[in-house]
Each structure stands twice: as structure tokens, then as C-alpha cells.
Image 1: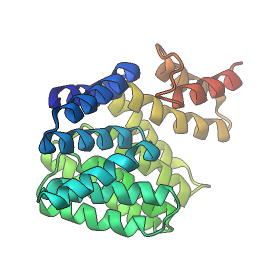
Image 2: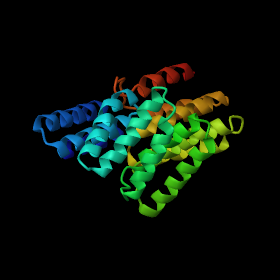
Image 3: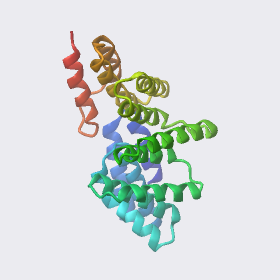
Length: 253
């Protein structure tokens, strides 16, 4: 089950979104059939990670509640901490403003447990919420601290997404001065290209193309988007494809 879940977390960034979704759903089904509490907790946990990478809070909520409950009931501190984080995120997305505080508390718990594997994902999602809550500088600080930690630990798997989110926050802070945001988006695209993480590349190319388009650079916008879209077909599991194709059509000379 763990192997199948990790397979899903590998396939999705590489661009095989259909098989990734099928794999994580199969892992959860096998775990539930086992009836084994730790196995079920792990499956819910991986499902939350997967749907959080996809930014799909509606799918996260029931599984977050499950691992939070299992973590508390059975003395599983890692699942309790991650469950609290994912519950906070899904509640924030549903309009419950106490979600941000829950996420901050949970992130501190995860860090205290010295479980660093998925901290880049946690930091990126928290930074988005911090910015939405009006704490833009805190969000940027969260990302900068995570990038510094990644440089120390060598954990680079989510750097493209961290840089993309950083670009979004920089653009929000300085909408009239796009230089820093452009640099962050460009860095995200290059990291994703180097790592061959196609979904992360397209996610970074899309805001970069929008930025180019808004600053009267349609040729640059078309070039970066066409490259990132190459080989992708529309897929319900990855709606950014359809959005990017629509923009690419609008940019066509």
C-alpha cells in the first residue's frame, strides 16, 4: 500500500495524472480492506498529501478528519499533527477563518517531531493561506525559511512549487513591479524542467505566461506556455491543462 501511494506521489509531478489518481485511490481501498488501523491511517495520510499537492481541499477534508481522529485515539503523533494541518486547510478553504491558526500550530508540531519530508508542501500551502489572510510578509517569510532549509538538507523535490507560490505572493505585494515575481516564476520553470516534473512546470509556466501577457509580451507568453503544454491532453485530474490551452489559443498570432 505504501509503495502504491508513493508511486502516485511520483507519477503526478511527472505528468501521469490519470495513473497517479488511480494509484492513490487503489492504495486507500486496499488499506480499508485490511482493517489494520496503522495501515488505514497511513493510507488516509498519503491521500491527504496527494490531494494537497493537487490543491483539492474538498477531497482532503474527510481523510484529514480520519487521520486526526486516528492519531489522537491511538497515540500516533505524526498523524495527529498532519491531520490537524489538513483539517485546518480544508476548513480555511470552506470559509472557516480559524483554519490558519490550526495550520500554524500543526506545522510547529510537525517541525518539533523532526519529520521534515513533507515540510516544503506544508510551508507552501501555509504561505498561500497566510497571504490570503492578509499576512503577506509572513507568507513570504515562511517560503524563504523553507527554501533556506531545503538548501541545507538537500530536499529539493518541491522547490519548483515553493518558487511558484513565492512568485504569486511577490506579484500580489508589488503588482506594478513584476521583476521579482517574474524571476521566481522563471526559476520555478527551470527547476521543474531540470527535475522533469511536468505538472510543476505547467503550474509555473501558467502564471509566468499570464504575467508576460499582461506586460505586452505575447511571444514570450506563447513560447513558455507552448513548451510546458507539449504532450499534455486535457484531464479532469489536472484542470490547469485546460486553462493553459485556453490562454495559448488566445495568444496565437
